[in-house]
Amino acid sequence: MKNILVVGSAGQIGSELTLLLRDIYGGDHVVAGVRKTKPSEKLTSTGPCEVVDALDKEGLLAVVKKYKIDAIVNMAAILSGTGEKNPMLAWDVNMNGLINILELAREHGMKQVVVPSSIAVFGPTTPVDNTPQETILKPTTIYGVTKVAGELIGDYYVKRYGMDVRGLRYPGIISHETLPGGGTTDYAVAIYYEAIKNKKYTCFVNEDTRLPMMYMPDCLKATVDLMQADFSDLNYHCDYNVGAMSFSVGEMAESIRKFIPEFEISYEPDFRQQIADSWPNSVDDGPARQDWGWKPDYDLDGMTADMLKAIGEKHEKGLI
Ligand code: AKB
Image (cartoon, rainbow, N blue to C red; front, side, top):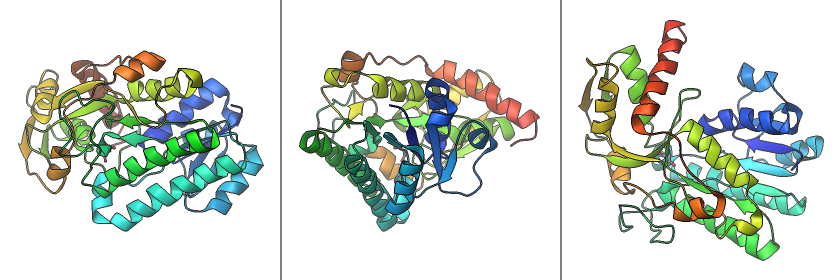
């Protein structure tokens, strides 16, 4: 790959992935595709930035031509919470945006397309513990429906056109650089910010809610490792399970109390409780470990220490 376009560069994963890809491939070779006209200083100062919309194929094409793009990472998506509020928007962005990118890649003979998936592909009838790679995919959210369809259409492009399309089923991603937006697992980021700012948090899912989660450094490592894996080693393409941690909200609160003993948590479950209840507790990522050597580095307390330190520093500087 010579020139990569990251669509959705201003988002939670996109913002950090773009910077990491620039470290690896060189700033000039990684174009940050953002929807807003004022991207962060970190994105604009380390390489090219363009305003792109996954739904605007002509606009994407102009950027592809301008920078001789030969790989696209599509991080643009409407997540589970926002998706339930606006199902048609989720369908439009997640499906039509994806098909625009796959078609552009096909028409221009691109070397690789990365299409993220999610634990949202699973549903209430999927086995909840150690959810296998191959299992029941009957999600009950529009986001999950688009993610199942995204995996299938990506695999179709591999089979039908011999293209290199890859993707991971991300668990909830926890990070302190860019806030997530509109997801069900957002509580697992908000809890740290509120612990630092107010020493208390009211969570929108209940204490026993247990989901697969991953800290951003592991998320970035998984994404880049999959991108760099030999295509011939891949037994799957757009749907690799990747696990790292599995914990309940109560266990998160306990972990935070090891650093902030006075931290208090209360619970006011909303519509996202049902979404969380339809997802697994943990996933079996054996194929990812076997095919491209996936292995996470962080556990809950290691992540908590890191998150509280980073957010604490932001707070001291008056940035949050
Ligand atoms: C969401 O909560 O919608 C996302 C996801 C698990 O894909 N973070």
